[in-house]
Image (cartoon, rainbow, N blue to C red; front, side, top):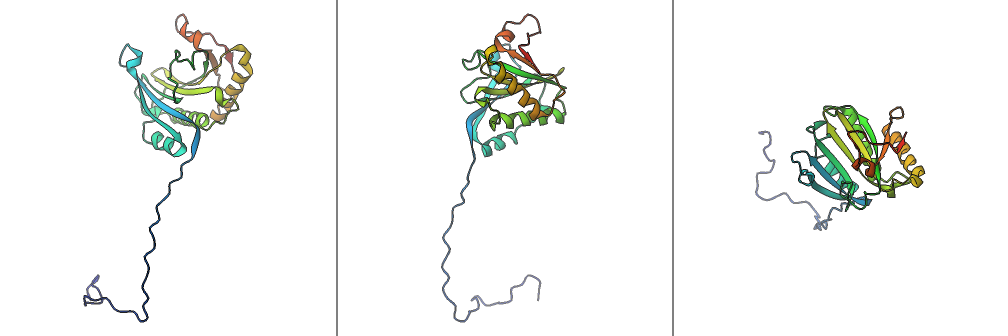
Length: 214
């Protein structure tokens, strides 16, 4: 017998004694259950090509489930693969990654300096962990966190977490967020500084006054 040749040459299939009619099983639609996040988030991409800031930043996509986040995150470049003068910005939906936004103007940012991002697994890992921590709302003060930014520059990489209340009276919450960031990133020995957006906007030269340090 030739391999693969059917045993029965008849066009009719063999009968089975006492064969009972088989009822077709009803088709069951596959249900995809997604896991909702506490907030809806938006990814913005910045590339410095124009002197007009608004022309350099673009809204990429929004998501409000864990599955949709990973679908987006796994299909874009890592920070280590970006060209210099590029940023990723993840912000709560409806908040633009700019000081002038009404929900940012009274806030500030925790800032961590890292080596240049080019081919750096450290930068990629830190960025992933920061994003997971903010969209996962693991901070007791998550309502104060507006978003996070990674700045890819030739001299080094900055990762910043933006908060909405930079007042000195809110110092305990600001410091608690900073300590949690260091715990998330495992950078207990690295210095982090907190700058208010008002101080950053009015700075003289390249130095911004530090409101808090940890």
